[in-house]
Image (cartoon, rainbow over all chains, first blue to last red; front, side, top):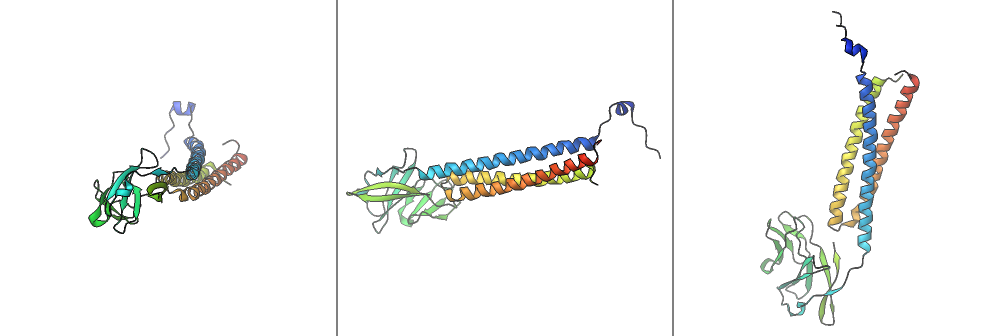
Length: 163
Length: 79
């Protein structure tokens, strides 16, 4: 059976769909490669910001009231800025450990549980060990950032953050 | 001799490949941002280097598309 003749409008204005798709996909390949270059730029920018942040000097801040803590007690403070809540814990053996109070799961505030020597997140029942700040239960997978502390002239000072 | 029909198939396949690489790069950016915000700065430079390698792969594929296109144009200028 013969193929029916194309309508007149198609004969007057022929469209080469194959050619059209060829050109549009070639242009899409160029566009995607441009997007790839932009993503390299974004990744490089993030790496630069990370490098710049790491070199920044961390302030030293006295933790008021730390000396009066008994073993098993804890104290809240803010470090390195007023926007960063932290928790200082005096362990049963007398040493001090401090961590960011922000849970690494969804940023709720953790609280100290001396009976289990853990830092507990009430939002999703996550827990971290007091000794190391490592996650021991619940959804968190990353450790709590540790705050370095030093004793200076009878006072306890926060001197840095270890991510 | 290469034709536009072959070229269309080739370019469609390469577009898919470039798209997959692009999605991996997007994931790398998201992971790098997550690492930056959580303070794990050690993974940022390797992530940027891998992203650069993937871009070079994309650029290589695009170069192949463009040279293929040039060959087609040379062999059949009326197409």
